[in-house]
Length: 507
Image 1 (tube, rainbow, N blue to C red):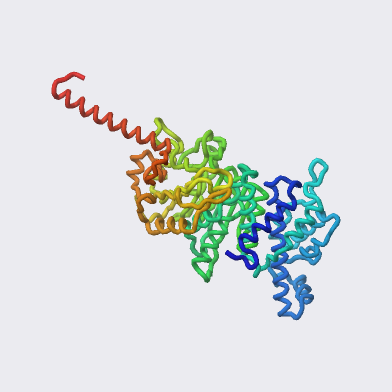
Image 2 (spheres, rainbow, N blue to C red):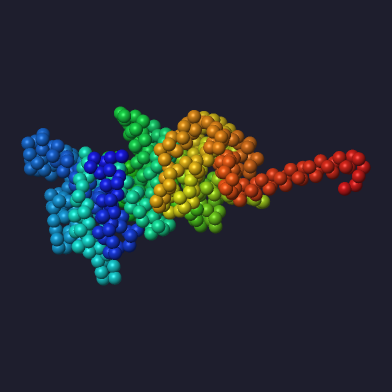
């Protein structure tokens, strides 16, 4: 895929060169915190220059165009003062950290939509009396980032998302647990957006939006489906990390998409409220932090009645807390797509006694809201090697009383350091989902009664055999099978005792 001058390989080599230029100055996982805002800044300046050149053709010269724009900001998407342009700032050789920070704050002041977005990094900050990133490193970084233009005709709008994805992927091991909280692999995000099937004018919400990738992909999928869109999607998101929140705002801005992004902890303090309940949307899509734990009282004392299906176990996982929040955020015929830990569809099944997660899952199954469960391969995500499940919950299911299970654990290509979903794999999943098909070794349609018999275990691997000798069954599946064998044994014993009793034998 090409981005004007920048193809994927060139983009990645360019970013790697940029990262190497500040190697040693800061920890590798922090490279993106400096490189991404600078790429955003350069993109703004290049687009601004493109628009000035376009206006110059209309008004006779760039000088006239700039003067008119300074007087009437409606002529342009955003305004950048002359002394704040990339080309002028990069020429500074002394005190560049301070002057760069001042320039970014000035741009934010001139453009209210960019406040808290472009001005989030202090390039002059110190730690223990030492500069975090030196003027020399900033100057060298800006020279490297000056190699390519990022204007309207030079790159596709997703340049920021691609850059962020590459830097996360490159430093995934160093970033540890935190990295994958903020970015869903591109191909997984696209699959989820296709499954969501957004329609014109709909309100789409991501309660754990990270860098905004899933919301952006929903809009891109709609643009792909309809070349002329009269009513674009209305995008809403919430993110708890202030830097990542700013990333989401940058991402939407670069894509020319209007997105209402709020900062804060969604489970504890949801930002989209209407009256006494959370705001409801047409579609919801998310990749929240898996197996997150919240104190019991967070769910028990929720003022918005979001957790009516049951209180998730605070000691184990709040996956079904996230799902219930998303469900409470759905309109009457709404649909949600979430990617979550595989344990969310198996935990508690086959065990004796009650289990909170299983009881919540049982209610979703019995009320016929779960439409599909798709098992992905392992080592796709940046913060874990574990596989994930995509769960589709639909208040307007077409196939009542049925659940589609897809075992896509073999649909991937090997990558370094992570595997990735192929286009063929994505198309195969979508064909089965929208065609509601059964394919041996890949998909199966079960009834609510069948889910009930399997103690509400919805793992695709429980029902779909890949016919591979080396594949071991999950322990939850083994426990269910043992339970079924024990039930059969007890039934046979009961029938035998009844026969012997009729024959006059004492048991």
